[in-house]
Image 1 (cartoon, rainbow over the protein chains, first blue to last red):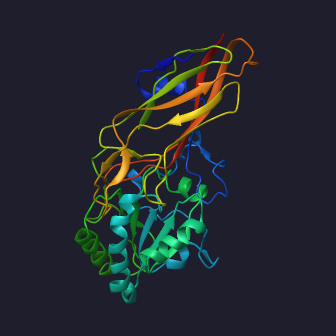
Image 2 (image 1 turned 90 degrees about the vertical axis):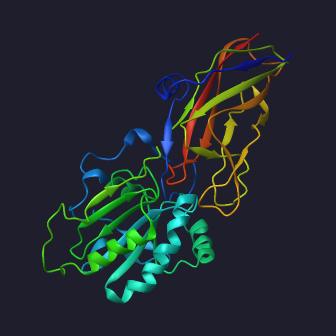
Image 3 (image 1 turned 45 degrees about the vertical axis):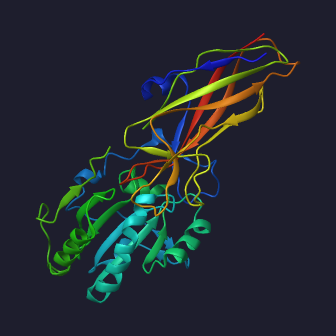
Length: 214
Length: 131
């Protein structure tokens, strides 16, 4: 005996209440898919990307492909493009060649690109991807802690431009602006005050952009 | 981003079979990868079920759309809008008659042209009336 039951689409709240007994999202750098961060944990109220401009870069302690520990303090005095990305993120792939070019062009002027991969499967998937894309900048393996520290990172790519003082100059969620706009923003930061001079928040460069496709 | 419809009751005879359709709806502009996205880095949608009280003999994914997106040189295999994932269940002859639940998990990862959301795994539960 065979019987077909079809169900009708409704809002997610009802669906969660009736059908989903749990929701989880990415817990990067975890050894297996079964270890996933519960969505209900959510980002802390203490850091919100929407209000991040002018604030100090949140702390993290992550490892690169060589196992070397990296913290924001390692880049003090430099302009940094901090890109949260993943190998499964198609739109991230648009920006990677731009960032490689910026790394080549500006690295001798006190600039660095740092990519933080949020891949759950870790270096197993990251290393071949980096090799295939010929990525020339430092890649770190992200985790739940860094996600939380940066407000949850609910979309990738999320890119932060950080000034020489270690303060967040701009935040870009999704592919929110083009290569030339990024480049101009980097140049302005490179031409900005040196690390010994404090920077006021709300400057011309300080913006939060987000694609309005959602 | 992805809404899943609440389940109606699935009636199945002991020793018999029944088909279940999980109906999902995505926000406009977003897609999820199909079960065979054609790129090793992309995360496929996957519906899995527990081993009992029914046996999921086959999970039937809908025909995907091939979409050309700005980040990919080739079209990728995706689902958009509303779609259904079917499951062909079989009840063992020894199944206990009465009300029961069939639990499963749906894993997916959604993107639009400009951003991606983290992969998610959601629990799915179907109420059974085993007769």
